[in-house]
Image 1 (tube, rainbow, N blue to C red):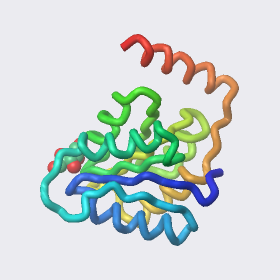
Image 2: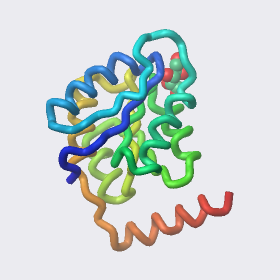
Image 3: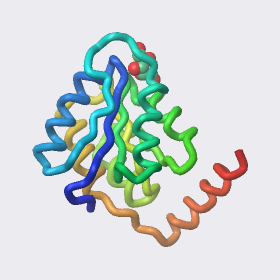
Image 4: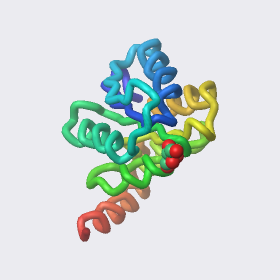
Length: 151
Ligand code: RB5
């Protein structure tokens, strides 16, 4: 369980509205969100915002990251190109629980056009409360990391 965590969050133009709702939710929960933007709905490119969050997670200034685009797909594809990042696109609390317990995900991706704000807030809460189970799951993550090291 992550308590009073620094959470890095960013979006693209499609995710700005949901981002604002989740920043408010994170503050309400006592976390310290760092909002890497954007702050308006002008069209931007999701990779430019994905890397702000992945850098914060990798340099330790954030313990977890949240990335939002229209579907969450562009954000998750981009984030998973970055060494050290395990980004999970979640559409349910079940996804969010498994992403932490089994996959030790360090970035949550959400689709603002696919997941409503109420559900997204619940997914976020479950993700933050999750804990990695290790054991057989660590063996699998080690194999993923070995693949990552080859490129
Ligand atoms: C923007 O229209 C949309 O393509 C983007 O937000 C995202 O869904 C990409 O994966």
